[in-house]
Image (cartoon, rainbow, N blue to C red; front, side, top):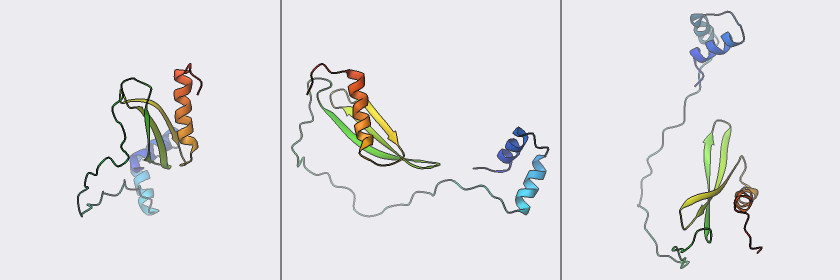
Length: 127
């Protein structure tokens, strides 16, 4: 929120002579208000989620590190808008081995996350 104290401090920082009360009065006269925070989350009603069977028959047990990686993409709400985060996790150790953050949801976000892993691990086997 950008309210009177913040505005006052910014004006003082650029060597503008003013007082806190004057900034408050001028902001009130010109109807300048701080923006509120995020909206309160809505209550979503309905059926609870039901666990389903493993339809793809994935094998989630791994015996060595760096043999199976899984990825996920999520978004982060920021002041400028949405930021998209791609994360690569090693299935053996459940450790994040690579990630990439971009302002747009494009396939390059996953490629960059994988390139970080290749650059860091420098695998000997060329596939």
